[in-house]
Image 1: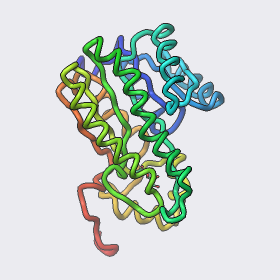
Image 2 (image 1 turned 120 degrees about the vertical axis):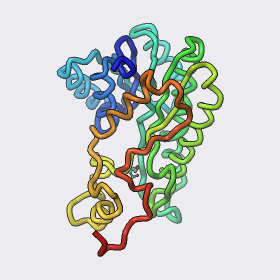
Image 3 (image 1 turned 30 degrees about the vertical axis):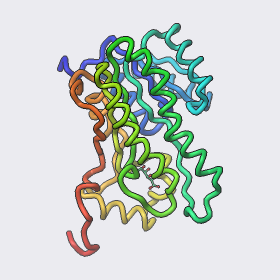
Image 4 (image 1 turned 180 degrees about the horizontal axis):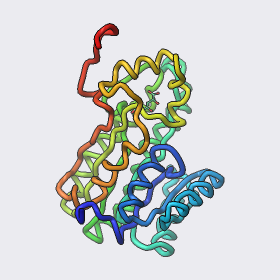
Length: 261
Ligand code: GCO
């Protein structure tokens, strides 16, 4: 199990105060990593740090917006001074705006691209520098089913997550020679606050996802822990530019007619 041991490593998880980010942070913490959690919401950050400390994890938190490159540069320097090197970066923070493209305000489209694509680039560049210098690092970009597929009302999110998939492949191309592995996780449909509006029992989308997912269920955040530990550990030292889909099989199938078992 040495391959998956993260003792002595520090993992920074953006938006790690709830949902999938928290689940991955728990997985990394259980594997021995020290946690650095970022958020734009002080209340959420405070509550999450209390939770992590109750789990027995060494967790520190910082408030900043990943889309502001000057602030990110400042904060990464402070973190390096106060916490030390960052060995693992999980670009998890993201937003979604559900609106048909024809009526979506451009400002909404731009904001989603900024948070979900430009932010991960800014964070990877700021922390990638120390990883390249140290000749060691792990970057995990949280992509999505929407890195591969579109659906009504999520044009901005799909464009951002599709771009994040290609950013992952491009950073892997440039940084693999420095022993920095850049990969992605593509969650399928998970039971989180982000999907709550489309997941209520009896909601047509809820029934659609259950029918469309070979595993016939929504993902639970803890379903992501193992893949996060794998991509953060020595076990993935020769894995570069890969998006691992944790999706219950959705991407493996064209789906089945409503009456098929
Ligand atoms: C939606 C959902 C999806 C999922 C996830 C799928 O509105 O379709 O929110 O975007 O959250 O990203 O991978």
